[in-house]
Length: 128
Length: 343
Image: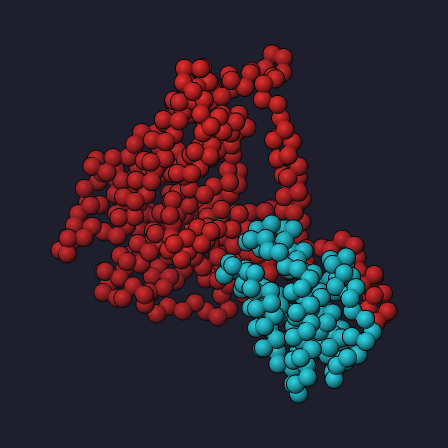
């Protein structure tokens, strides 16, 4: 988990963090999505309990998602539905061939990518 | 930026399964997978020809095992000798839908039975040097030696992850179930896991209902009722509509008998049995929004290939199950029902 999130942040620089009209939301979601990325990748180690099939999610999925996110944030309101659809069904979902896995992908994403995630002190899991 | 880097550094090195939304038991599963990989590697480099002093040689083990299995292998299931009531045609000249399923299943079982009988006899001959040890027999030899299901059986068989010993016991039970159905007529509850193609059976039940009540089959959907009865023997009569299904398991969660809901597993208990479930077709039925649509798979592998019928070869259907938690909770738990376990 830790190593995975760390890797996602290797290419993130201070300029990238500030290069947006909504720095607050951008930064929070950046972390949220990195966390999500790590979760779905690391879930594979649990075999069928994690995913029905083992998918090769990779860093370019996350990069693409960041790029889309930046574009979306230029709008007045954060388009949550579009964000979840594009990230879940297209960027990551493109790899998923099992319907039940797709349900899981979207469910997990909705937890990390939502209005509540912008609030301070929002917890991704019981243990914080 | 540095702030983020520092924060990530502060995260714990080992992550508990809870952050993935999984139960603590998932860690056991993970360790299980890792250790199996190691054992598999060790097994694959075991020498074939040397045996411990005083022990049996591989040839002897294979011979003994193949003879033992051949001796208890059941005979072919004969449709002609079956219960007459099962194959009675109705006024449209059709036999009951479930009997069609029965015939299809029996055909598949007979094919597997023939294959097993033939190859068990062959392996005996080949090991003794009377006939050529073909590639097929050689691989079968190895599998018998390692207590695994031979590939030539698995090819005409059903998906299963069991080792040979329990696979065979399970196989005998399956044949016995179908023999009973064939000879004594429809049972009061059906052992869904015993079937080659449970999806076909599920469609058969819908078709029966559709013919009986003249409702279009695509308007029918299953509703589910969880009974208190645990075993197939506990139900004496079949329901008026639909079927009773026995022998299912649950993985990633368990069925709470007291409250009749799905709930979290007990620590270190990886699987739980399910009570008898009443699968009842209803017209235009929609499950409650708060119910978890629990997927039912044939094996714990869950993974399947998309077949020509548009169905996964492992996924059977969704069973709407009541729960206190949101469906999202169970989706992340990876909760599912299984037709059989691995051992």
